[in-house]
Image: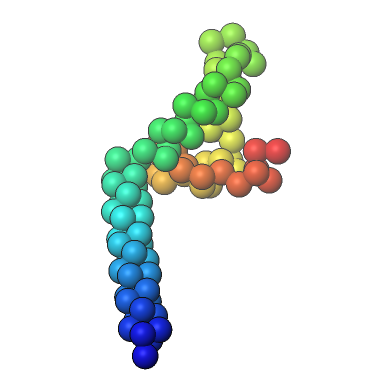
Length: 90
């Protein structure tokens, strides 16, 4: 019978760790959504990737975010998307 108590403890610990991990993930996602952290990181990464100008006084990143496909992913007219699928970028 020693194995069954050990198995019960292992199942209990795994369940506890799983619930704790899900709770921590939910908290981090809520904070990221509340502060628009993903959107800010995406803008910074794309700005570094696409640095340069296409026309005088027009940054490429601004024209990229003004594209209708990218605008359709944005929240509101002046919002920035937090995720852009690779098919749209390509």
